[in-house]
Length: 135
Image (cartoon, rainbow, N blue to C red; front, side, top):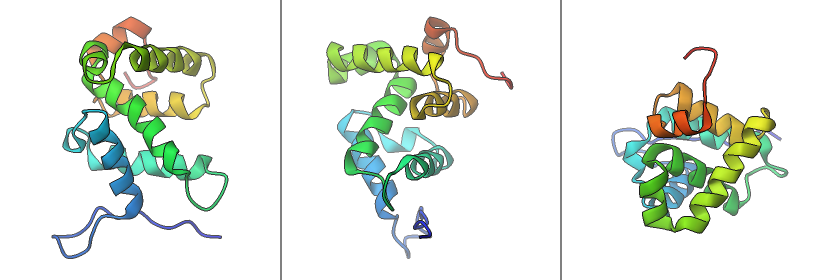
């Protein structure tokens, strides 16, 4: 079965696809405004989610999980903790540590995406000693 394509819309004439709207909503819920993340990054994120999906589409909670990682990378540890609480911050940091060990995980791909797109906070790069082949 071919997967459904994502759409960012076109001059207000065609609407955003459901998957991108779900990611945007998840980002807003985490106090990370969707406009702070490039559309290319969001498109890549939903495609990664589709690649990991068991069925035709990602589970609704998958958007939240991906948004947590992106929001943490974009906002930084302290602002993320202030907006979402220290427990969620600690949880995302443990996911990053696990992603470093399991380089092919979805979390690892999202961190690498943020790193290569240069939307990740420098403090996070330093904290976890992140680097990519291109950086």
